[in-house]
Amino acid sequence: MVGGHMEIIGNGFLARHLAPLRAAYPQVSVVAAGVPRHHLPDSAHEREAALVRDVVRACRSGGRTLVFLSTVSMYGGPGCRGREDDPVVPSTRYGRHKYELEGVVRASGVDHLILRLAYVMGPYGPDFRLLPALIRQIRSGRVDVHRGARRDMLHVADFVILFERLLRAGIRNEVVNVASGDCADIAQVIDYVERCLGVVAEHRIVEAQALSYCASVAKLKRLVPEAWDLRFGPGYHRLAIERYLRETGQWAAVPGPAG
Image (tube, rainbow, N blue to C red; front, side, top):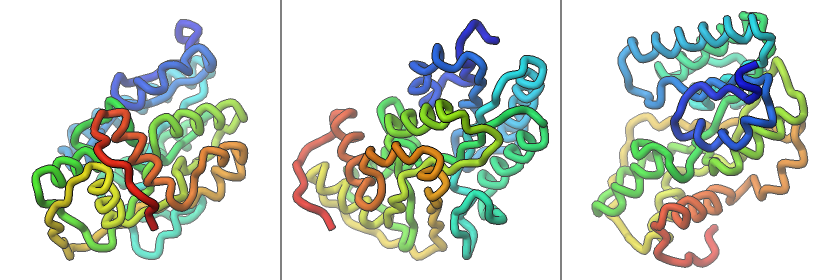
């Protein structure tokens, strides 16, 4: 036991929002640290791999449950349905790295829970992530629109609720997508952000291959069905965007109904 509290490895965005749960789950260790960006040198990936191996050893010796925060971005390959039990062929170095670490955790023999996270956003999130980057581009007057790109967006408060309910339900030795089920077209996301900011930017269409990181939430709904009172599903991304903009003091308009 680590001080009678859930051990949270990391001190960043997700770790900060998970901190209120520490007292409730004293036999759990959460790896909420590691590689935060897609484009980093191999040395950064190697440091995260070493960290995961260290946590595995500590959990094995202490009889603790390891929660590893992974990513749905490994679902970007062609024909991928985003299901946890389907073969995964990650299309990015970041996705391959996370998938390899999942294998380390699964093969370790420790009780574990692997959570493949959608794009989680909220207060104190890194400035380089998707939504802050889009907001900066929109405010600058020109925004890149990657034709065909799609993302499942999840507000951090709802992530914490789903995380806690999975632990409360005693789910172990499973891989679970933690997402909203609303995989929105980036063009629609940009349009809605513009409406909320009261700013219209020039849209520069980017025709390069665009990836859709869309995850199935069928397993999540089956494991924690009561979580679907959080208004997940179609249109959820608009609620999450509004909440983020209000919480970060960037709300400038009250948009009408969106399609």
